[in-house]
Image: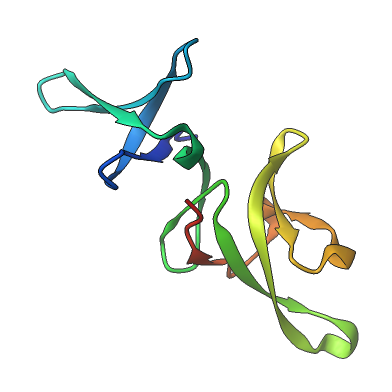
Amino acid sequence: MDITFEGKTPMGQFVYGSLLEFPDGDCFICTPNSDNTLDKHFVLPETIAQYTGIEDKNGRRIFDGYRVRVPMYGLFEKLILMKGTVEWKNGAFHVKWDDEDKGRHFLGYLEDVEVIEEVM
């Protein structure tokens, strides 16, 4: 699995790569260059998200914290569009539904997932 993180720099630029966290709380995302060197980007800790390893129906990578919409069949096979937030829980990525009565579903089992918002 591709273990990639995203984060936002103080200037508002999103960067993707490997995460470095220091004891003082500073966080950096490192991105590789073609000459086998790394660029280190300071990122705001509250903007860091991990790639789930799953893409949405449009080929967009899904990260922890993203808002998604998923078509689901309810009672009497009626199609409903469920919305929720991707989160890490009990060792796996799940979608926690906005309707708390619906609980959560394992992200890897859902079909036709679509990212509707990057929450940062």
